[in-house]
Image (cartoon, rainbow, N blue to C red):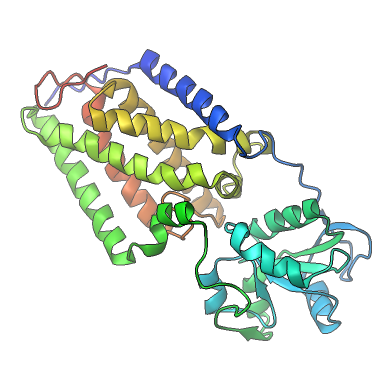
Length: 354
């Protein structure tokens, strides 16, 4: 059995983390997001009625029905256009919280700041409605209601729902750069699945090769470059969409609120820098350690939320939703492909350059 002496390159890994912090903060300084997110001021409404005070109020099904029956103001669906099209509360308008630069202007043209507004998303574990409510409050809206049960609760109650897209919104979403980096939107689902299965199979093959002590082939070096390429591509949408990625990080409901924005600023740059180094064949020990560590953190966070039943999106390659089991499949393959960089292969084909 091959001697698995993993050489952990702590110094180079630490330097990569510091480089990501500096680069991320500098980039964010040019019109990015606040280092600390605004405090969540939402409060749960007492009873079943609609509070009349200004602020963000968390309400249940009875209050949501009252809001709609009395036609007090617009009902806003914070989910993606795909989810909205499959089914939404009848009469709701779509304002996708992760593409506000496209969805917000048409809504603001039709709504006055004094108008009450009710916002919802998928269900009780979805935080997108609260994120959108915070944005609306920052824009000057005074009375905001967040329907906690969301569309799932509304549908289960057998109440009126609609289907189809929101005709008031443009068909194309996102800026050119952001749309180009949103691979989850235009790469077919079957191709994602095929790639994830191939990555896992390749990772298992790498593990077999290393256990046999076969390090002379091109495969170990190729595995590290595959890892580098995956992380570079995964980082692009996060870098050009810091606010959206911050909401995705917050949706995991793991990090303290004060650290969410900082993590969203730095993490994509850590992925990009480490991935580029693996592609270039440089600092492989440190870069492999960083990316393997990130992958382990991702696996732990996803598994933890699956156990808790918390709804979340990965945010890995854009704004589209990826089933958690497929994310775990992908991460398992990435972790196995990182192994050659965590040991000194001592071969010309996959030299571990630190």
